[in-house]
Image (cartoon, rainbow, N blue to C red; front, top):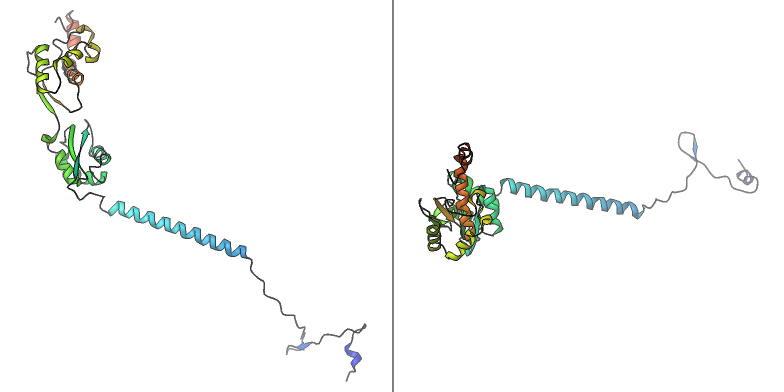
Length: 257
């Protein structure tokens, strides 16, 4: 049996009691630890990270949906039949895609793909689309726009046939009769050899250099364009025949040969 003094350390401090752990070893009591509080910074970082990941996922999902639509969806197309009027120009060498872009820019069709799909379905006819100006409706169905272009009779052209044997004065009279321009406008161009593109040995005289053929003139063609086309056609024929070289071999110029 111990007395009260045995439970005191020197100096009067109490010796803490020990509890048995059942194994014979004593274990001291520990003071309860207070739970640590998490800082707000960690929560904010997690929230920001979740927001960023969610945004990336949404962008990826949206891009994926758009890609699927582009690959497998129907291209945008107007229901038609369209209204109003606009003139579009088909240039020499234009592909179906080029024509589609022209039509899209003029708001004739809703998308380039709608027109190219229509042209692909009728490739032989689409390949025969002629250069020229065409009057179209605005907001047409792509297949309807194709129907206009594959019909050469829809091209806005003034067709003039220049027979062989006509002199310059006769050709001017013919052009004035078949077009909306007067003789003075054509004669003014004939006075400018450089504008006509005449060869040097023509010495400014267009006589004999307006090639006889059938010409299709568009609504934007001016007298200078029409006469230049005839001179260009003569140059093409002369080149095919190698006219200048053959005349030179014989000691002549193309005009005196």
